[in-house]
Length: 280
DNA sequence: CGATTCCCCTGATAGC
DNA sequence: TGCTATCAGGGGAATC
Image (cartoon, rainbow, N blue to C red):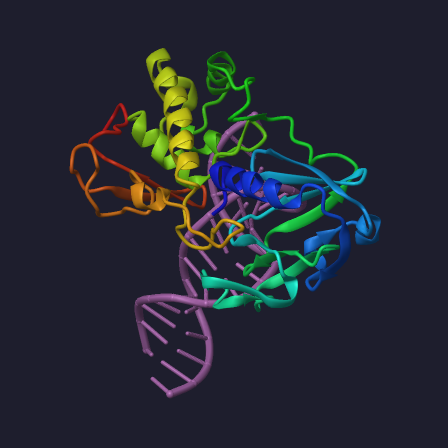
């Protein structure tokens, strides 16, 4: 699922292709996934790509096309829209060519290139606004994401730390993969109440988030299920998961079998030896 | 305030 | 074989 490292990888890639291109035509095949008046974009030029948390914003003319990929969204670029063929199968699109069955929106540019939005489960969206999509939260790669801010947020909540990490209106960008791996890195149990973390633990978790997100970025994200880069290349972090999707496999640090629990409707993975609760 | 549940959607998988 | 039930999951809304 696309989290900060995946969306940032996509942004850096698309930035190279899209800046300066002019929108010729937009094909919206799944109406509910495009919010706004697409006609506003015709003939307008792309001037910037930004990202906050998991939301990508493409500046087109005076408007911002905001994109959330949710669980299964893919953005693929092709220099030749009339024969968009990739050398390898696109994961879960069951095809090397575009458009695929899962292609729901296509942006055509004036030079014959195109951007394809695939999304099997149709949870993702493109939303046209006159500003980047608003979230008051601090992005994890921002200078404003400081230890002080992090600590203040944690001390105000008695929720399980894992739940807090996933709240996009507090810290934008972390999803299930990196929340699990960061907690493992910091040796903190996912159910531990946020406000009960010691100063040392808060510091370790702060470092762990930056370390794990940084490693994932270097590896161009995690191609666990659907995610690929706009060139249809996989990331590499899935080969280096610490605990995520590794139930029953050995902890990379101590060899203990990794456990999986469900809470608040989501799965958490952790090492029962490295990440202990006070009373267990 | 927080915790839980449902919903959106589809393919994979399990059970009969 | 083929049908049906269940599940995964980001995030928003409704409910307790």
